[in-house]
Length: 164
Image 1 (cartoon, rainbow, N blue to C red):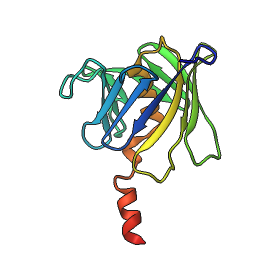
Image 2: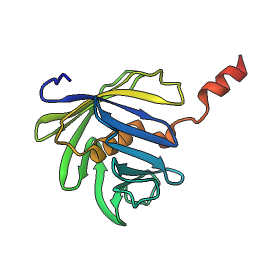
Image 3: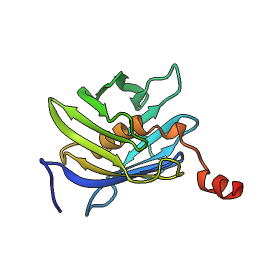
Image 4: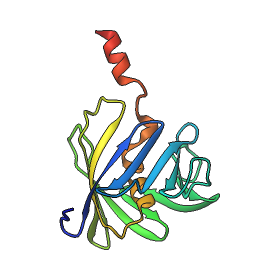
């Protein structure tokens, strides 16, 4: 396993209904499932579907964006995300079709995410490099905030084949 600047390689896969994050060579560290329109429940590796989510990401207007156990635990203002009392700055590469962004905390890069799938696919795949001390639930939460599964299409490949 190689590290780059103290960051460990990993991967994430996402689509409207579910997603996951894992470091290379380790089991899935966090996974998310759709919890209604515009909502994602994020669970840790030892949790089961149906457990109380460790993090709820709710993109619906008028709802807390980031909450846990019914209490707000974070918010986003532009490129700044406050989550569990930590401040993260997201820097997204502009003018690219594929998602590419990095996250810094205390002037140090803690997460780098690059999309490897075609943007018109139903399932989006990403290669990641992340600080091993960063909670996988927080990592997946940050990826969800940028990748926006609530805006992803459900059946791109099927619709594409049907049109040809």
